[in-house]
Image 1 (cartoon, helix red, strand yellow):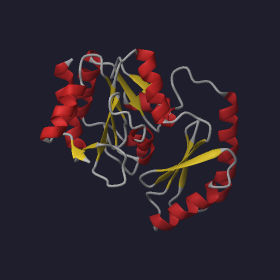
Image 2 (cartoon, one colour):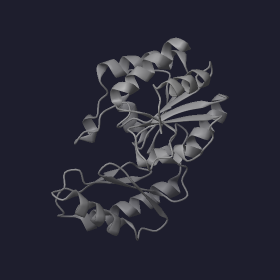
Image 3 (cartoon, helix red, strand yellow):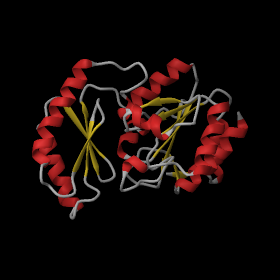
Image 4 (cartoon, one colour):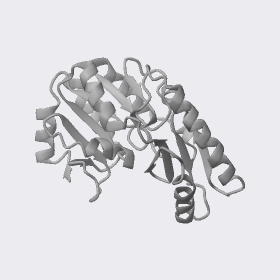
Length: 246
């Protein structure tokens, strides 16, 4: 992986972020720190102001694993930015009764299986579910348990994360297909995408270097992203770098 603020990284960034480039960002771990209480995962004030400035001058989209409604709550006050939730499957126009019914059935099954299990909670995001185990006494054992109870669910795809197991419909769009759709919708010729987690690999593995500049927050030998930022502070540096260029 190449550090985005190294000399070769800056050359790639400057050559890529021309007028019209779509800026696509994950939320948790990218714009906001990971917290024990996901409900309170607020952006820092400086990050929020940078995002507001970016949205005013560049086509921008948030691609998050959160439900769209929850993401909009956290992004209140940031206008002019598209929000796509549930790992790429929930836009402002998403409406699928069949998927909602399927996820509701999964919720019933999983709720019964985690009843009384310490440190594991189930989050219902409408179009997907998340099993959180950050507060479990033994996170490794909790992760194995979460996989074991979710694996038999029909028509489900399991996607890991940072102390979370996401349960999404197997036939649903992922972040990669959602980003390509957003490029078509906006007419943007290219996109810069920044993410930090397993679900962001759906974008990284697209391997479209002429169309998508993929950046991971945190270096990882197993990631398909070509470029990386060391931490969230460098995400803010990137936002500050992008906004004046538009």
